[in-house]
Image 1 (cartoon, rainbow, N blue to C red):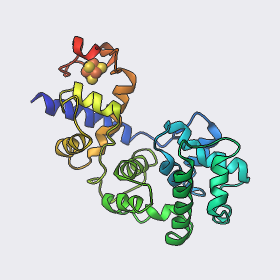
Image 2 (tube, rainbow, N blue to C red):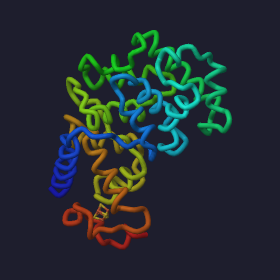
Image 3 (cartoon, rainbow, N blue to C red):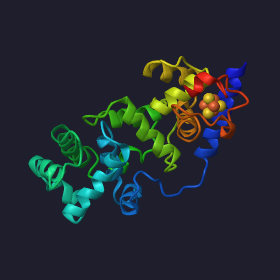
Image 4 (cartoon, protein in one colour):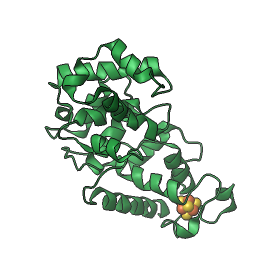
Length: 254
Ligand code: SF4
């Protein structure tokens, strides 16, 4: 069936990305901020705290927040962070200009996440993933942070596995993050209806590749970002064009 071939090709590209050598992960357009986020040895909490901020604003802006704190505090060590009161965190998030669209609620999540990392993980956030947990356990540990839902928890586990080469006992519970690119590409590839719900997308990916549904996330996102644009598709450059039912279809260009 064509959909099996589509799935196989997405999985194949997902595996290429999964097995690519470790390199600096670009979260922002700022080198210093990205180095901090990539420092899972000395600052693993930067990755965790940034991901918690990744909602309702552009991802690049959210992932910059730890570095903005570091600039203001002179350090982003857990020793420095645990000394900040909730009102300190709120002020740092607000002044001189707001770091997030929802300063009140997000500074509360930021503060509580620092407390959780300090109390639950002895100030070492890498303990969330260090013991090679099952994917379900890793996702559950992220879900225990206030403000973190399945989308962020799954994204965190997927980035750790794919980009940082962190080992998990399995990948069954790492789902796709159903963003607009993934939804559009799954729809045009005929894997789901164009108006599929988040749950439909997640369960479709689980059905297609149960061992590691999230493996299809990045290839679909990449296709959506590079060729399968909302208004103007560039099917001639897309590696799915020979299988895709929407390739060069006018409806895909509308
Ligand atoms: S072939 Fe065209 S419509 Fe199909 S996924 Fe690629 S860019 Fe989108």
